[in-house]
Image (cartoon, rainbow, N blue to C red; front, side, top):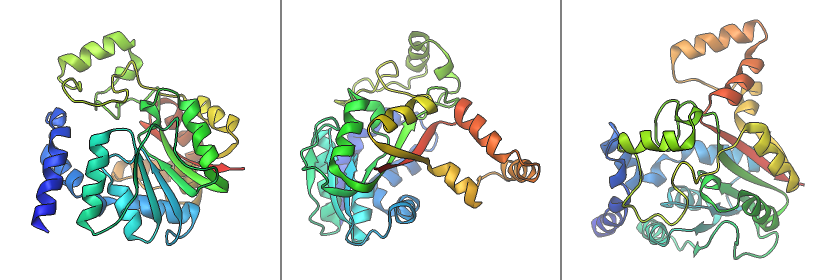
Length: 279
């Protein structure tokens, strides 16, 4: 369907121009346009954590450009997409139409979801909570719309992240926010001129220490599991670099792999990936 692909590309492109500083911009743009083709890891994570996707009532909260929502629907999940940016809602619909899917898309804020209590088996909220007005209100809404025993797979940005996940700059999270934002502006990494409605400036976004975020989740009635730590315990956490794999093997041999992981999570890693289970 060349026409559908062209229409989708035209809708996406204006939302990518502020990232042209990326060295891999062409490859990154292609992955955005064909986002549903690159969701294998996340689909597998859902299946391993929350069960088979077929028939699962799944809310993609902060669906963005719809890559995961469409990929999950193609796997048989009963997906609903919720997205705050109206332009992204249009992109999700175009992406679904590309595959002849009828996928419900709601333009809503994470703090006020238009769904009944216990509507979903699983909620995913990737790269979302840092942008909302109230993280506590969003977590409360997730707890409300999940059935008891349901799972929420969520990411949260580490306040001590050495490489910032949004601006891809080293060390800026260790600086006072005004100084960090001057560096972002000087390096041309800001998002000025892009019509985002959610919080996007570094000083506006919600970053968390690991323990702080876990406590927030527990107050909303969730049992919290660190997905990477669970992979580590099962021996499934892999590093892309040979050197890191060798270091991990050496730490495992002397019984310090878990301690090293917790130190990295506290002081270095860019984001936390968590499974929140509703009691």
